[in-house]
Structure formats: structure tokens, C-alpha cells
Length: 478
Image 1 (cartoon, rainbow, N blue to C red):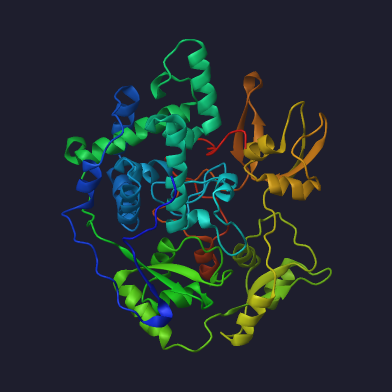
Image 2 (image 1 turned 90 degrees about the vertical axis):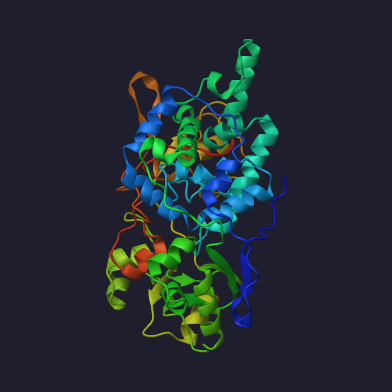
């Protein structure tokens, strides 16, 4: 089904100082609208009861998750309604990321909808030096719902569609075919599947039950108004994220919670930027921006010279090496080649700084461990890409090859945080080599842009408390 055009969010151009459109009439509470639209058949059983207990025993965790969700939930419910989908789909980010917009799983899935890189790129979610659209609230929601509708079209069953979102539609299709061949039922609860996928729908069912009747579980869900939380502002001005937050009279943390797609402390990389701001703050932002003619960028481009090191560059610009790496998304062990363009602070905001950014070409430095995979008979790049959480195009670029087929014994260079570890019995599991990847995500983890401004935190992959294993959304075959 084609993606619906959002109609519930107020959209105006910052430079125009336009008034907000009339807002829709508010119902009593958004939870009521969600429960009224439940349409996926309920399931029962020990796994549902297990997750009901899990959430009931963690009221603080549930409260933080609900508090984060209030920024996004009205928009998601409205988009779900516009597509005629069951409203419990809007609760899926609670399972995926606990509504942490910068959550990162072991398979490099990111954003509240947890797209892995390859599936995100397949659905047009741009991932480059400046931004990661998998974390973009509008774009991520649009593509996640488009993907879920596609899966429902494939299986004509919402439970199987959800299994496909978690496990990959290729794996679900194979499991269905195997059961059919054996004369066995092909429903969600009758398919053989990994433990994570077997727990996936029970988690959502537990959340559905809690939203329907929180008192039954000894929980209190804070009210969420059935009204827009944010307005959409479009601007073609390049600016620091810190400056944008100040214009909107918001904390940087709150600004980045609504705009978590920005990888750097500068909003750049596109001719027009879309920002989400609370409605009152959006009006303030638009009015102030219209009156501001001064440069709003305090970062500039710098090219690495022959034999120059990151510590030397950091010292030159009065920053720590850790901050320089964090600002530019460079891993602790990654090597930066001569001529590579870095983002460094300028003495003050200036038109020269803006010009240097527009004239430079910024690229990402591959992070993670580089190793060589030995291809087996029948191996394809698409399979290896999914296994290591990278894209086929990246594999082709690293190895200078154009086709997808590989010869048995061929060495394939891979740079990835996902490293296979041999388990007893000859099976393998995937772990993340990045330090701190196994730590739970905090209430709203700092985005890369926030880390850069703070100048403290080292790049650490956050993991949602609800994500237990590496997840591979999309077709397991690529």
C-alpha cells in the first residue's frame, strides 16, 4: 500500500512566519483511541503471562517508556489510522526500542522502529555522514508502516506480518512452506521460529493488555492527549543543533529527542531540512529565525594532511581526541586516511564556516573490526551483508567487485561491529564488538549530535532493554 501523506501535523516554512493550521478536535485520551482500534486477534499463554509480569514488575521502566512515547505516539496512531491498520501497530516501538529514538541493537538496527542498515536503505532511509533517517520520526514511521503493510499483503495475516518484521519475511515464508508440506498449521503459534520471534508477539500482546487495563497489572499509564505534540518546520538554513534548540527555547536534549536523525552538531547535508518542534516552540522558532541574519554555524571543514594524526588535529582545535572522534563518527580503532575531511570547531559562527561545509565532501570512516570472510559454496554477498549487518553495496566497494555471486574459497573483506562467535555444537551467534553495546539504553540516550556538543561521551552503541538478540528485519536472503 502506498504511504499515506501525513495530514495531522502542522507544517509551515520557518522563513514565512506562517500561522499554524487549525488543529483537529481532541478526544479524551489517546490510549482510548488505540484500544478502540485493536484488530489483531489476541493470543494467550505462558509467554504472554511472562511478559505481563515482566512489565508489571518494572513500573519505573514502563513510566519512562510512556513518557518518551508521548512525543511520537499521536503522529504514529494518526498514520496507522490513515492506512487502515490495526492501532496496536502503534505500540510496536515499545517492543522494538521502548521508544528510545537512538536505540541501537547488536545487528545495528536503529531508531524507534529498529531498521537494520540494509532494510533502511532498501526503503529509502538515507544513512550518511550528516544524518541517519532510520532515526527520523516522520521518515522512519512512514517506511515502517509501509513495510508492515507490505508484509501483511504477503501473508494476509497480521501475526505473520509481525513475525516477518522481526525475523525476516524470507524466514517466515520458508517456515510456512515447511509446515504446509507436512500438513501442519501455518499460524504464528504453530511455526518453528527463534526464541526472539516466538516472544515478539507475546510482548506486544502483554503491552496491549496493559494499555487496555493498566490497573489490572498494578500500573498507572500517564495520560497522553489525543492531539498533536509537534509541528513540522521546514528551513533551508544551515545551523548548529545547539543554536536551533536555543532559537526554539528548548534544551538540546529535548530538541534532539524530536530530531534524533542528526549525526553531527550541525544540521546540514540537504537543501531543505525538516525539523519537529512542540507547537508553541515552533512558532517561537519561526519568528526568531525570520529575524536572524547572522551565521549560525560554529563548525568548519578540515582536511587531514600527510602524516597528521587525530591527536594533533584535536590539540590544534582545543578538543579531546575522544570528542573529535565522536563529532566525526570515527571508531576508537578506525584509521583516518590523508585527505579525509573532518568537522572541527571554528573560533566563532561565521559565513566562512558555512561555506567550508558546503564546499567539502564528508564521508564516514568504516567502524568496527575488519576481517576476511571465506566464502562457501553457494554464498552470495546479500547473505553475508545480512549476517554482518552491512549493505551489499558496502561489500562491493570494500572488495572491488560488481556481481553478487562468490566462488567457494573467495576471501571477502568485511568491516563490522557484528562478529560471529563460535558456540558449542558448531552453531554460531552474533555479538557486537563495540564497547558498551550490551548496556541498556537510558531514558533518552544521547544522539551522536548531543555527544558532540557535550564533548564527554564516547561513541557507544545503545541497546534497548527489550532487545535480547541480534535482529534482522527484512528478507533474510537480502
